[in-house]
Amino acid sequence: MKWILYDIGGVIEIVDDHSWPTELRVTWSDRFGLKPEEYDARLLAADLPDTTVNAGVEEQHWQGMADALHLSEAEVASMRAELWDAYCGEENTELLDHARSLHGRVGLAILSNSGDGAREEEERRFGLSAVFDPICYSHEQGVLKPDARAFEQALARMNTTADQVLFIDDNPPNVHAAQALGIRALLHSDNTTTIDAIERFLVE
Image (cartoon, rainbow, N blue to C red; front, side, top):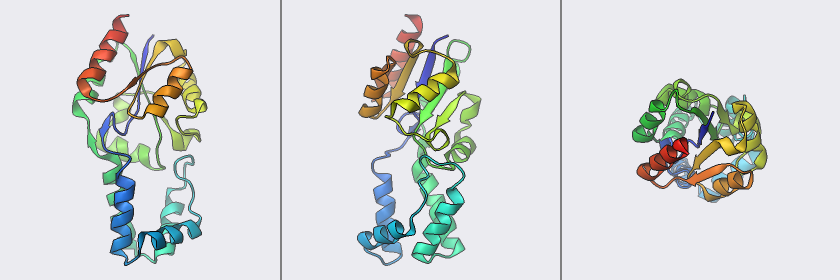
């Protein structure tokens, strides 16, 4: 069986992962009367857990943020909501609907760099588990793309080989890493091009 392996942010979700972290940093540092550099220094001193390659650390992360910035519970709750809104962006309805239409024709899976808590948030917003299986998150696998181990773990969970997979991502280093392992890979730029490439892959 052939497989389509999707990234989430910038593919399944309409979001610019390169801009929102900086925008939140500026917003939050300004809100608490700090220069961005002072904000950064406080968080660095707090030694927050790396939520991108560790599961079960989200609460520890936010408690560390609260302690470092002297935040109230209400302020933390507001920041968490803002972060997940920025992180998740909006559903790429056209591409997700196309993926739904492929059930029975091909295996559908996700390989995404992520933060602890992403599975719950994205499931609540987009219902990804009804479309994709497996969903491979970096915070659960313990490794980030473009590390080859991220792709190798995904292939193992799909129980397939590289030549049976089309990988779709909006980040060139991730595309190149997949190709180096023998995975067919497409740099996502627009829905029409991606959908056309998927359909061609399925009839080859």
